[in-house]
Picture: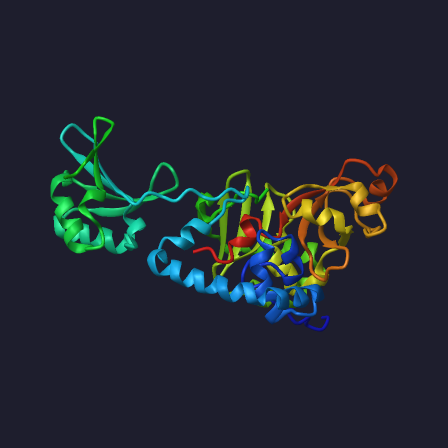
Length: 187
Length: 181
């Protein structure tokens, strides 16, 4: 048997995740530059010169960004997320949608969508819901690749209170029902 | 192919039977003899091997939540770029000129002139319909994995149109999916 080739360790750019030599073709070369200067200065010799010139700008830019990020640090990373086409991904609206689906004549399922947008772990949530209402509750892959929680039984009205109590982050105004195909606020 | 690819597109993943596991190992070893010595590390016999099924007859071979290989229908298994970067010499290499990098990295197929121009290079042993690593002029690492449409000789003589199909390139969906849970 041949000698075992050792796996090569390749350093990837900390910003865009590409091997540093491809950063210039990456989605956002400008953002990679500071990282490249620190970690792979020999790959792009031009950068160092450029960086020195820009140093002054950067400091003032940093000051600005810190003052901005104080207010909206939570929402910023989501906005930066880009689709492969280069378009900026639309920010998802934070809302919870509760829908009652009739399964049999008198049996139904309550589905809860959008809990994950509030940073709630869906598997934990389904467990809590199941415990509270003494029914089966499960995390299901929804129609449009989103995950949702299915709870057996009609719990549409009690669930609002339960959600706002268990997860204080969730404002009551963000909860909606779907009735006859229309979206109705819960409050 | 992986341009828009997310973990949500995986329609199902199964731990495969030992016989299927053997088959995968065998075909990988056949396709990439250079990988054989480390195959035991990559696809340990003990740890479960998971095959994830995705749309378009695509299969991903996953070990310890890391995608390692993919194949289409019953086609050959191809390594992911992250794996190829670790073992760069396992595949036959084509090299494209600098002008082509931009297009390849946005998912374009590789056209013959980009391979035959001064910046490009061809491995003459490559037949049609076989996986190749796409390198780039002046770069050290592979930037894409392709599937040849014609043999290297034909690419040289015809020098027109698509020479290599782009399967998987840097910063596409599969690249971004470092781990799959």
